[in-house]
Amino acid sequence: MTETIAKRRVLSGMRPTGRLHLGNYMGALYNWVRLQDEYDCFFFIADWHALTTDYAKPGDVWQKSHDVALDFLAAGLDPQRTVIFKQSDVPQHAELHLAFSMFTPLGWLERVPTYKDQQEQLREKDLATYGFLGYPLLQSADILLYKPAFVPVGQDQVAHIELTREVARRFNQLYSSAVTPEVAAAKSDKELMKAEISENVIESAIFPEPQALLTPSPKLPGLDGRKMSKSYGNTIGLTESPDEIRKKLKTMVTDPARVRRTDPGNPDVCPVGDLHKVFSSEETLAKVYDGCRSAGIGCIECKGWASDSIIRELAPIAERRHALEANPRLVDEILQDGSERAAKVAKSSMQEAKVALGLARR
Ligand code: TRP
Ligand code: SF4
Image 1 (spheres, rainbow, N blue to C red):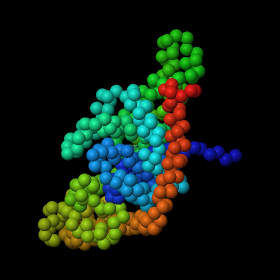
Image 2 (cartoon, protein in one colour; image 1 turned 90 degrees about the horizontal axis):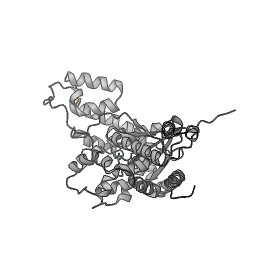
Image 3 (cartoon, rainbow, N blue to C red; image 1 turned 120 degrees about the horizontal axis):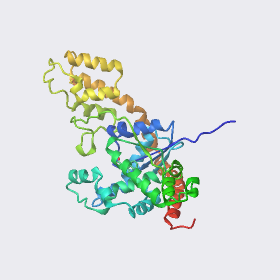
């Protein structure tokens, strides 16, 4: 007899920043593509989240979401195996967010570190809004709707997953009618309290607590040596042409100790060295270390090799992107299909939540 074991579920989202860069790729997508082999994957574009910071000037969020979807597919997310969709196409995200807002203490949201940090970093924007405070609560709804076991994210999102777990716990405590054998058999309040924290209750919880899956993300410097980020304007695009990549790398900062060609350098303190560590073969890396430390190679040559390595990694992605661009309706169809598959799960969770909240008949 063949037994099919249900794969555990993974879910994650990305804000629609437009065409993705190498940092987005190595920090998230690269890992997501590999997770598809082992998990039941849901990946979505968090377009509502774009409005939490850019409500005053949203621009073409639709276009940016579309570009991100193209890059998801170009990078190798496979719509056959994976559910790929846009947050705003599945209205249950907004609905569950509203439900959660009823019982989430303001203090929980005010204490999320990104709340104050982002307000300080984005001083030019007025982020004293209801939506911005609720950013991580919307994220909690995004996640819990699908009851995933894991949420692959970077370190910067861990506090949001922690909040998600607290929200799940609070919902379960407030609204799960814990009809486990222990609860049914309880003869006193004391016994009932004990029964309610038994393992069985947690298993029957409406929203299981998901875990963050901290995906390894190598240090990826931008052209100026700072972290690669769209807001610094120091990025290399995921689907830039080989010529553009070579041109950009030529301007990249190097070990400041190598002023002249004859000065030895150290790849460990050079941003180009960091790129080699991520994208180059052992062989090339050995040549870089030798040549740089002995001043046997020049930075121009070294940057040429780094370009080769990056271009090799990105070639299949560029190829898939071109194929998709030739068929513009395809992305719409994939997102449409994805939102239908996502909605099946989201509707069922939302119905359970409504019953638990007393809004719908059992
Ligand atoms: N806040 C996440 C980020 O900035 C994006 C996001 C929104 C997300 N909803 C999510 C990530 C749900 C994981 C799960 O990267
Ligand atoms: Fe950096 Fe390469 Fe120049 Fe060394 S040779 S400083 S690693 S660019």
